Length: 54
Image (cartoon, rainbow, N blue to C red; front, side, top):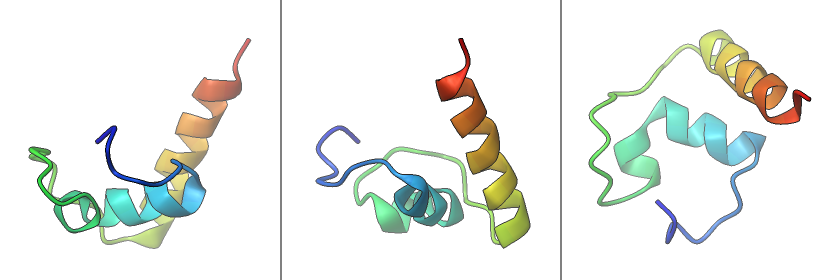
């Protein structure tokens, strides 16, 4: 995952959460992905809040 070759921003996270194995080839991630855009957006919003929390 560290060698993915991109910066982890909201767009990359969205694509990864949608389909981890397609977005980062060779990942061992067992999570199959989330098809629903509204759920992916909620996950990204939550992660953003965690990363900016004091």
